[in-house]
Image (cartoon, rainbow, N blue to C red; front, top):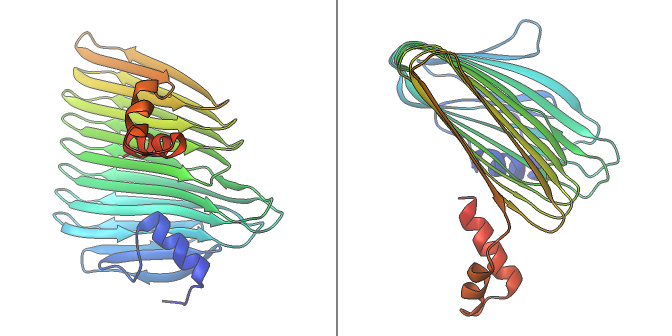
Length: 308
């Protein structure tokens, strides 16, 4: 593994919770270059022939193994698009940790657009964690545009944890998933914007097989003059259950737009959407302030608890 500087190591810790080389398979990328890779007997990582990303092959019945594929940008003016494809064998049960951190101290925008495509075979299980983080004192923007596409075969399941809490100036996240019979998708999104940041989260989940189940929940906080849009669509083409929920706190002069969409194409498709946007309740603040917290400290406590 090639050495990384202190900034890159800090970014890796933020987006992948890594302070050392992880156990299992991994592929590290810094400033558009590969800086480390390790495969195992059950998980193989190969560079795409055109150099645009990697292919990850996970053998059938692989259990209790992980894959870490963090990306960091610490130079101003970098713009890249990377395609990573995951092929998860029948009966496998693995954890995949991705994410991107950008530290921009320059005047040019830095941007990472990552396209992750998952192909889960029958009965496969994946926990996928994707964290985004931005820092740096420069005027250049920190831009992240992730695309996640998942194809879930019969009785497979995928749990997605999507987190963006700090420092990203602009993001457009699009997630698409297609579920076969008995497949299950769970998404938990946590998002906070501040300053003049903008964030778009789009989801389209299609229930194609009998007994397919999807549960997409987003919790977000919009501060200062930031703007958020949550656009979620669940399509029911077969007997199954789909639920999407947007729960948001709005502060200062922030703006939030929630766009629910349900498409039922089968009489036994059960689809539900819930949305709630509001400010922090005054009685919550008062209760914490009586315990000795300032108003600002009370707000932070409430937000931290909300986004857990």
